[in-house]
Image (cartoon, rainbow, N blue to C red):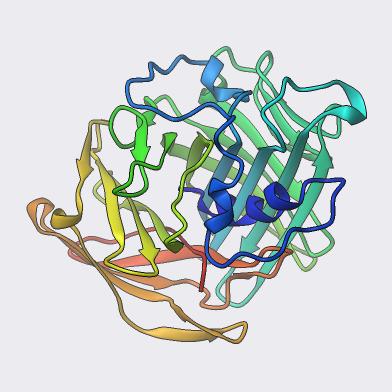
Length: 356
């Protein structure tokens, strides 16, 4: 679940743009402070496309999140991340110009087996520096763009970002249907009912170029889009999450997340995505998700090797980070990077870990 979004936006939501930061709150306690006036997430929403590719005014937080597992012509592995976050500072109707109450945040990263670079951008809404429009579809912050000229925006898109140590230009295409996560897009995050609206496009194929430290690579591979929006997705007891998006060699896909808590067992759920796009919600009793080896990353111990078993799907795999040091050393730091899959199936995917 884009994870990363809630931890990253927390500082902005608590501080606003024109006020000093609020005192630090441990975990995600601050997420409940201002949610009441925003639109709640409730079961039964009927999704509408392409409208739901755009922004959802009235909700507190939202993100457009892309990851890609790429190879060059020599078989070298790379990962790419691109994320745009929208944060409403209050629930009032949005104002034009500099009075606008929306904050936009962009994250971009590239990863190889030996290198990880990450960058961030911030923007105020209402002045054209960042935003999302539907016709034609365009999500941008500064010159980072996720844009399409197609009548079906998610069938053919261009993705780009650049910073001083990296850049990438990718074309993402798919003729496959979108996937609604959870209960027809209602994605629960706790036993108390916190939730988001959540859909994905796990069937993208990416092609393009990637530049790292002055070296250019021609790359291709599978990509995954996550879209979520919510107003209060977590409880004060939840301390962080571990999120997996996995492309299996069989053509099947798996999304899993584990919401860790101060007290009690983690909240664990996921989605099994068949090769034809049919989905099945996975509940905690169906999933065995166990951290294995750790690595010292940015002064903390991070589980960079995992085992995952879903017995009814005959899945028993190991997840290994391509680069254990894939630390997003940004204003709000977290771990995010590509992973390799071995065991009963091969494959590749992405892992995000927050709150460690």
